[in-house]
Structure formats: C-alpha cells, structure tokens
Length: 489
Image (cartoon, rainbow, N blue to C red):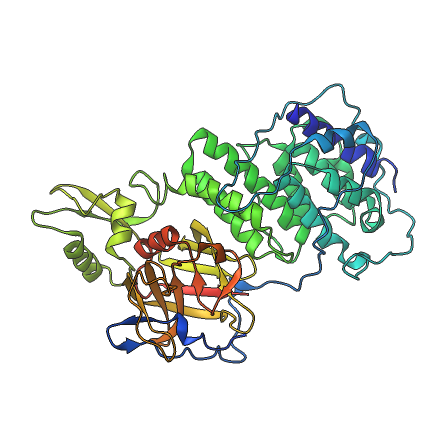
C-alpha cells in the first residue's frame, strides 16, 4: 500500500503542481584530562583570517525550519499521505529506509505530458516564514526535494510547487523536479517525454538535464554525472537523491564498495549543503554507510587501496607497524586500525598471513551544525557518530588540528580541585580521551567519552566533543596519532 501511495504521490506532484501552468574561546580546563601530574595547555585561538577548509564551507541559512509543516487538504492523494507513518528518527534507533516498488501504476493519469514549459505570468512575491522572498525559492526547492525523498513523502514538495514561492518558479524548473521524482519512482515513460522540452529550456541547466537522464536509467545501473557546479542547489539535491537510491540498491545486491562510495558522497554533500543539516536523515544514511563499510573499508575482503605485508615468525602488530612505516613513511597507521581492516582479533596473527594496510590517510571531520563526527579514509566517509558540542560561552573552536595524546581511562583535574581518577562520579571524561594538537602543541580540546550520555547530540560540553563511550572507544582504535581533525561550523 505504501509503495502504491508513493507512486501516486509522484503522479500527483506532476498533475497538481504543474498542469495548472501556473567562537572560539579556550575550553574550560575542567574538561582537561590528567595523566600523572601534567595538565594540558590552553588551546590557542583560531587565527583570524585563516581560510576555512573547502569541505567546511556552509552558506548562510535561508531555509526556514518549518518546511515539514503540512497543510490539511481533502484530496484522495492527501489522505494517502496522511496515512503514512512519520519519517522522523532520532538517536540510535534509526529505521532503515522503506523499500519502494518502482513498477509504474497504469491506473494513474500523470498529466505531466500536457505541462507547458513557458514562464508563467509573474505574481507579487510573498514573504517566507523566514522573512525572505522568492529569491530563496531555488534553494528551498532543492532542500524540499531531498527532504521529501529522505522522508518518503512528497506532500510538502507538492504543496510548495502549487503555491507561494514554488508557484512563482519557472514552469521548466517545476517540470524538471516533477519528472525527476517520477523517474526515480520508476515512471520512466512519462518522465522521458519531458526531456525534449526540458533540454534547452532557459530555466533548466544542462547539468540538471544530465541528472534527469541518469535517473531514467533506473536504480542500480546509473552513472551519476560528476558535479559541474557546486553553486547549484537543485543539482546537488538531485545528485543526492540518486546517491541514496544507488546506495540502497548496491547494499541490497552486496556491492559494498559501490554502496560505500555513493553513501559517503551523499552524506558529505549534505554536510556541505547551503541548507541546515537534516540530522535524522544523516543518522539514517550513516547507519546504511556503517553496514556497507563494515564489509568494505573495514574488511580484508574490501576493494580498497593499500600495501601488503606477509607476516613472519615472531611478528606482532607493533613490530609490523614499525617495518611498514620504515618502508612507507607517508602512511598513518596505528595497531587498532591495522587490526580492524584485516579482521585481526586480539592481535592474533600467523606466519604467512597476508595483511593489507590503507594508503589513504585516516582523518576526522567534525560538523558542529550537524553535531556529527565523521571518520574518513582519504575522502571517503567510513563511520559516523552523533556527538555533543560546546555550549554557549564554551563554543567548540573551528579549525584544523592533529590527533595528539590518546588516553585510556583518563583522570580529570577540575580548576581549584583535586585530581579525580577514572570512574569517579564527578569525572566527566568517560572511558577515552583523544587530544587535539595545534602546531604540535597540546590544546585543551579533544574527543572524550562521557558519564552523562544524555548530553550527546546537544550543546552541553565545555568546548570538547562529547561522545558515547562505545563510540569514542571505536574512534580511539581507528584514528592514528597525527591524523588530521577538521572542525567546521
């Protein structure tokens, strides 16, 4: 029933929407761990004028957070939408996306073949909920497209294309979105009929047409065009929809390398998007990414770039690390990562075993707006965790750092107090501490576990990144010392 409803929504999107024509202070030393008698030094401020990392760029927020509001209607399609369960997810209880039936529904009159691509008569602009006007419409349309796809419900997108800002967009842009949705839902015949009209339409770019053509190829067979313009929010959203669809199908088919590639691209595109991050969608995509990467980048059976080593008698992972780094000083390795990617349990290796170690450097991306930490190998996301960040007045500093001291069972020294050993009820650092270095010197910032997991996902720390103990323990094993840490707004 849900699959039929989604196909009906795609049809209604065309008929109803288009046929009418119409910073940073130093962290509070209370968050610093203590190892013996030494305390971490205060972190330097992020230098003024330092260029932001391109991966961390995020445009000003112009999309109101009310985009999921629903308008009550009485049509049969809207009644079907009302019957769908809510799409919101939170925490670790993230449901897998529902399966879609891509077969066309021959009983539906899609109506899109009659839509004109001429520009409608302009009407006065009306302010948006955020105080903007129709100038923000393309970005809002892009966000609604990916938001509707992630939530498996087209009602908000449908309503936007009928009234307000969306109705003032050129009909070519509106027809593009409707045809794209239709193609992704498997209604390729009707969507294909619009290609001739859309190709060359002034309001539609060549990149957008190429993405529509890719959608028509069908899930699992698409060659997603590379990005031609990072400044086109609608093309970004279309590419994200294709990545999500391809990732889902690749995961179902057991093509874990392909699933990892496109799901990583999807997640990182959302983090770099000009709209506010969709945190629930990111967690859902992260869950799918974990499943794919468990059998790809974190598996000896994965197809990933690396160097091989044949285990000799008397070898240990520590000894092997020294030998491999002597031969390849450009690599970043620690025994935890070495063991995980090779499926080594408790350091047990046998002479003659062939081990492989990644040549892509481990690094961590921290997105403060999304409250997310992403562990990557090279540019590919591997693991994603929800985290807590600095509260007001103790903001987590933006910048680029390197991994410094790593401590298990850290003690804690509050200002003017005595040292609190690991396990003390007033020690907030949890089971692990991973320090951030700046210019080779310790700072007071880092990743740590927590004795209060309720603060994960909130602005609750004194500047550090707060993680669940099980999550920071996993990061502790994965991330080598000197690996880069990028903190973006």
